[in-house]
Amino acid sequence: MRFHLSKIHYAEAAHYNPRGDARQQRLHGHSYKIELLAQGPPDAIGWVIDYADMKQVIKPVIDEIDHALLNELPGLEDDTTLPALERWIAARLEPHPPWYAGVRVSIDGDCFFNPVPLPADPLENLPARVRFTFEAAQSLPQLPEGHACRCVHGHSYILEAGAADNDALETDLAALYETLDHRYLNEIEGLTGSTVEFIARWVWDWMAARGHAPTCVVVQETYTARCAYFGE
Image 1 (cartoon, rainbow, N blue to C red):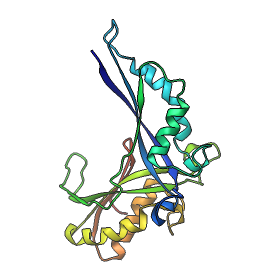
Image 2: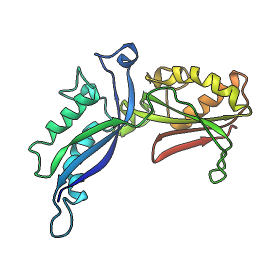
Image 3: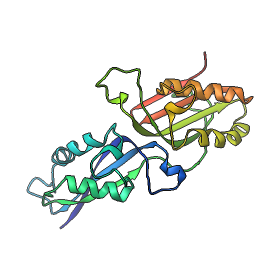
Image 4: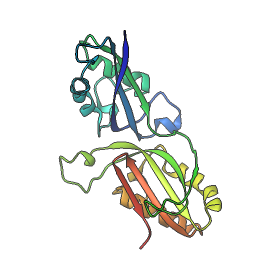
């Protein structure tokens, strides 16, 4: 009897891929989904391995990656593709425990412009809006030394934008995506201190400047960090 388990972790990191196309060579970032895989028969308790033990094995490696610029980590300077990152993590976990079955790394965003209309959400008091994701790096230089977010890192952002006419808005959102995706947000005028609050207000102003009547902007940088803005 053999079971397959996975313990999922997330890391918010920046990188650039010197071997990629022009877009990939720009400094940007992602929310990385990192799965530690296990397999084997259950023990007397009924476990292949305690999930807490899996977390303890990979946590030091996650801590190295999270809120980091991957190209600054020894061994990832010239290749930060997903296969390279998987190999790098696997090597950091050696010697592998008996239950080890590999590491799987993926990016949490769509990685292309994929607008999705969303209905009004009474629970969150949100009107109808359009959702898409974008991949970007950021840093918060306004924070004190030692704060993790002061370092260059990255996210797979979720952006939701609502306006009086969402059909007309969706046409312009492709241009907004091109402005934000695979970028270092701090280099965009008005986003030097690129908190989710600043990003939401910046997007609101971007929409208004193009003749749309914004109703809400929601920016989510991780599953636990989300900001909704409804104007002044």
